[in-house]
Length: 156
Image 1: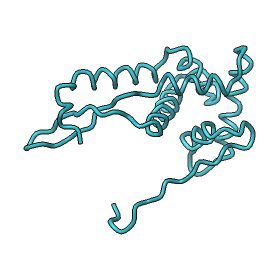
Image 2 (image 1 turned 180 degrees about the vertical axis):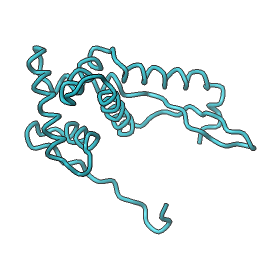
Image 3 (image 1 turned 60 degrees about the vertical axis):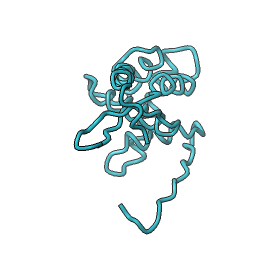
């Protein structure tokens, strides 16, 4: 890590169709080998599938899925006196959103099936209805933090 300058946080540009920063953040998570147009096609196709299968706005469903998947606390390894403790810390809003998007895309990729747009649409709809693997990951993270609450005084 450079000691000279702290890196500036880059502002996220909204996507061209939905004018949403959340969609462009999701594009960055799906991106492979710098092929942004393919990643955007996958996301737009999955949002079209969500629009066909549900009555409400697909962007609203995506926001609900991210809100449901966002963790409130996580554990961070902290080395104190030769032993490592899992210290529970609160998650800031931006990091929580990033974790939620990362988990949704990870578990969408792991789903069975061929088409990534279909897999992503199913994972988003599952997360919006509070089921699916990304929700299970959030619950697991909360359980880990709850189990290690005794080490909360090592917070920094």
